[in-house]
Image 1 (cartoon, helix red, strand yellow):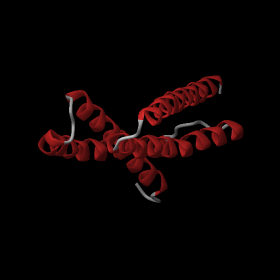
Image 2 (image 1 turned 30 degrees about the vertical axis):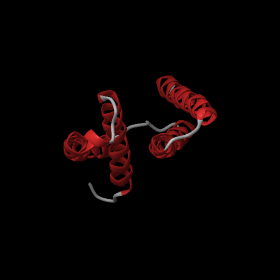
Image 3 (image 1 turned 45 degrees about the horizontal axis):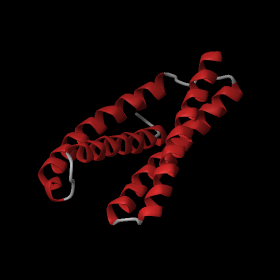
Length: 135
């Protein structure tokens, strides 16, 4: 269980770092005046943070019950979620490439939006397949 506790601590530390960085960015953006693009970024970041909470609580529950964090069903659900997220992400990236010219100022913004979208799609698919009774 030491490996599981270490993994959970690193995940929690990463979530804390992302939340702190987002909070600092939002504070300074609010000081300079928020634009519509700043407010649009708030939603996906908060959504990703909220979708990771079930992962942390499930891991805590597994550590307390001394059960493995991943079993065959969890691995199968994660594999199906990754496959579905990959296929949907291809179309997401095509849509960003086609429709993003008027919205994004720099290519790095489009890349960031694509990666954030892929993370959200994977987390939603993973939660769906985790709750689905038969895989």
